[in-house]
Image (cartoon, rainbow, N blue to C red; front, side):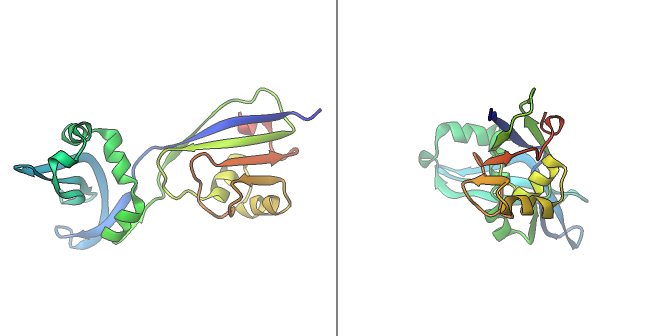
Length: 197
């Protein structure tokens, strides 16, 4: 009898991406980390908001522009409070705006530490579908993640995708980036219950 199981992997970022910029104090192109603090300046009803980054090697800072010359009446009052209170979740939301950061910096290092939180399998099904929950997108490749989960090489993962043992929904390139709600079906005896438990 065919036995199929759908379970969830949550990909949890353990840190925010570093950015590389020229540091005027270090006199070199160096990495900055997100301080999780905002700078808010207001002139009457006009507001400027930045997310503060700090140099890894000195006390230098860089202000990442979030809002510039915006009328305070055009900003949700709850969001303003989050900026004023240095809300961590809000700072992380902006720290993971990779495309915008790349336009403002020399580079963005998305090779960050992450954790996989998963449901446990108590029996070995014939077919498993993994659903990924991915709150903060940092460009993690599908083949890299599957190779880590299954204990296989990336080339083996790609070969299994080509022969239909691994199916992606939506049907995107195995070398593409993981996205929230991506589902991957694994067929046959590809995996061990202890590898996925």
